[in-house]
Length: 242
Image 1 (cartoon, rainbow, N blue to C red):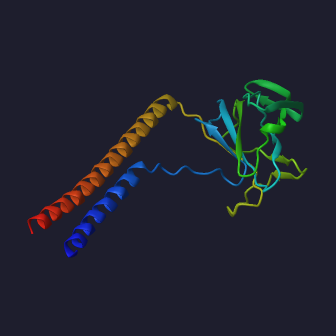
Image 2: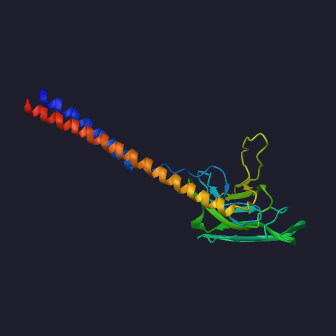
């Protein structure tokens, strides 16, 4: 009886280590959840004079109601001459154009009218439910001078609640309750092509380094598991010799 008890412990330890190693190898990397506020992200670069795709991420913050409509206000002091929506199944997008408060020079042309509001309205089965979010995309340009562009958003729920994401972030940096989405426009760089290539290489190098690190970690875990199994096997053989 004593011999069986002694042999069971190394085997249990080896199985435990092997299970931990396998679990670590099979565990996926954590994926960030949707933010609690409406945010805007530029796909790729957002430089003055250029064009970009803006993605508005809209989370549903209600425990019971669904988000049925999302509207984004576009700048009127630095208007976009081009505004295009991306088709989104179950949602109807409309772009409202209106006269500008005063004429604006953009790219050598004088604008007296521009897109003011983009509104997405959901079909009944496409509304954003509790614990869900949706992405809305816009292609816009040309972008204004370097700086920050506020893009206030309005979120309407199925219970008629309306949330306005239109508060600017104060100089103190403390985030308000309903901050407006902000697009940061950078300066155009004459060497943008070279910089983009270097950035791509940097991303590739980083990905390669990450892959090597993960491979090394997997190898180390495999060695640990094999070592634990070897110890258990040696103990079993020693017990049999007794």
